[in-house]
Length: 346
Image 1 (tube, helix red, strand yellow):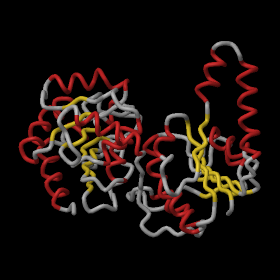
Image 2: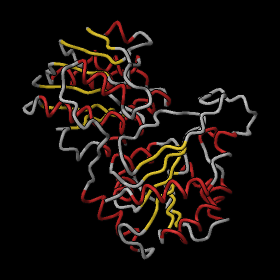
Image 3: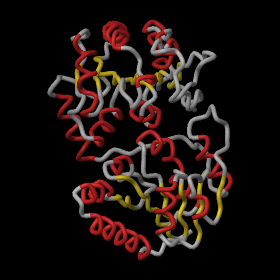
Image 4: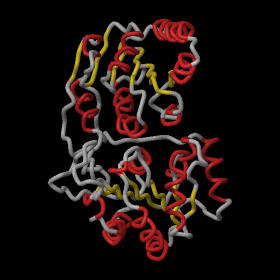
C-alpha cells in the first residue's frame, strides 16, 4: 500500500468512530500516503491527524447549488473534473468505509486497481473488488472498523477513536472560553443536540443537571452545538442561568478544541459526545432510541442505556413521544456515573 484513499465522507460521529482505522494503516504501512475523502466541513476532524497525510474535500455543496440554479451541465462537468483529479493521484487502493452508493462512486472514480468496501450496499458492492461485511462485537465502540482492520491484516492494537487539535482553532477556542472566565479543565461540555428528537434528553433534565454539576464538581456547564440547535439551547439556558451557551458560536474545529480541554462531557448519541471518548475526557453518553455501543474501551467513559424492550427503536419509535428510554435516565443517575468516571481519570 503506497497510496491509499479512505472514503468516509460523513457524518461527524461516524468519522470519529472510523478515525483509528487510519492509525492502523499507518502503523502497518508507515511509508504509505494516506488520503481521506470527506464532505466539506468535516475535514476539521482529520486535517491535523498524524495518520492522515491529506484530506480531500468533496465540493458537493457547490455542485448542488449549481444544480438548483439550473446550471446542471456545469455541475456535472465539475463533478467529472473532480473525478479526473482523483484518478490523477494514482491511488493503489481505495477503501470505502461508508458502504453507500455515493461513497462507492467516489471510490470507483479514483480508478484505484483495488477497491474494498465495508458492508457495501445500494449497488456500491458492484463497484468494489472486495466487500467485507460489517461484523465484529456490536457492543464495542468502532467495532466494524476494527473488524475490517483485522480482515486486512492491519496493526489494530489499542483501536480506539483518536482526534487531533488544530493549533489556530485551539487558540481561538480558548480565547472564547476566556471571555467567560473559563480555563482548560474548569468546565463540563453538554452535548445535548443531535439529528432526531428520539435521541434527545429532555430540556428540564439538563436544567436540573446543570446546578448539580456546578455544586458537586465545581465545573461550569458549557453547551455546544450548531446553528440549527440555537432555539433548543435557548430553552435549556432559560431554566439554567449558570450554563454558558456557545451553541452556534463555534466552528467544528473550535468545538473539537473545547472538548479536548473539558473537565468532563455529558452528551446524547451525537458526534460531539464520541469526541469526548476519543480525547479520553471523562464522558457520560446517554443513549435511548439508539445503542451504537456500550463498551467505550475507556476507564473514564460510560454509556447509560436502559435496554428497554422497545429500545433501540432507531427511526421508528413506538412510544408516541414518551421516550421512557431517556426520561427514566435521571440527573441523579448521571451524577452518580460522573462521580465514578472522574475518580477513574488520571
